[in-house]
Length: 388
Image (tube, rainbow, N blue to C red; front, top):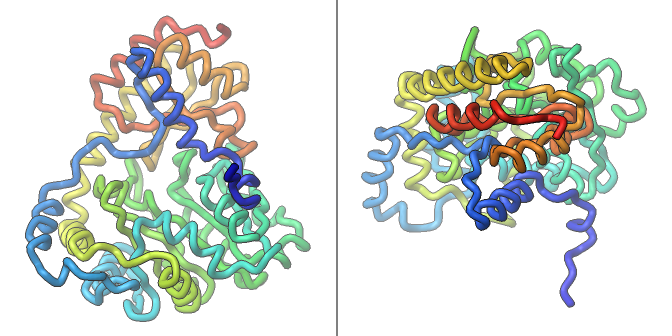
């Protein structure tokens, strides 16, 4: 009998894999499931990106091993985009590394920087990989609750001084999954100061940086003066350019953290396929115009879904950013609500408690279904009884 290592047995079931199984089980029984669970854009990758990939596919140099750090052209293009987007200057040779999707870097960073037993401060509700990668690396996740009364920002002043002394990493994610919250530059400045005082690396997951549906563009951590001394930011093309399957992103910021991440990467995986790197370069050249049709569609979906849910008596507002609605459920039991909803209507949502204890009483809905499917889901919900 082959059994998994204890490090795997210590992990909770991966939320999205479990939801995938439930969906597959229902569909095998003939149920038409409308799923609002996983944040995988249903819209196609814009044609200029696909055209660049087609052209790059014929280049013989792309048929060989790619450089671990990414090509010089890719890193210079990423640095140029950071300058254009945030006004920050980065050394593409020392402060930037290409990633096979930002998840790769987020999952590997704890292995590169944490000693056994050291602490990573992780937001909750939050992306499960921050804590799970910490556990796999032998570290200890300590959770920072994100509460509505604090605009879903962690209260850094409430962190126990003893815990702060043991902490090596602080994870932040704004615009935020799952709540849709946006952090201001003033909060990022406080976070940078907190990390500087406690000798902590600030790790900013900016996967949704461009999925802003109203208001000003979302700021980035590296815009804070001096942030590169204590911060690294993870960027992904997945959500912005509908490129989840392409697997491409980058990490930028503190040169020591970038070097450590690259050092780990060279031992466990390879570089990003050259064709994908060149497609990413085309995406940045076409930004921001290429993104606007996607954002306009998300705005339409958010408005339709939020208005429909309000007509059913549920309190919800369209998100300012991300393509998620974070909905407080009647009765406060998000798991029971999710199960009853699925059983009665065939509509699948994500229970908030899967993102951490502070998510109890909420569910997350992704705007990754077309308008007609959202209409169908709302029709089904009209007959839904939350109490069974």
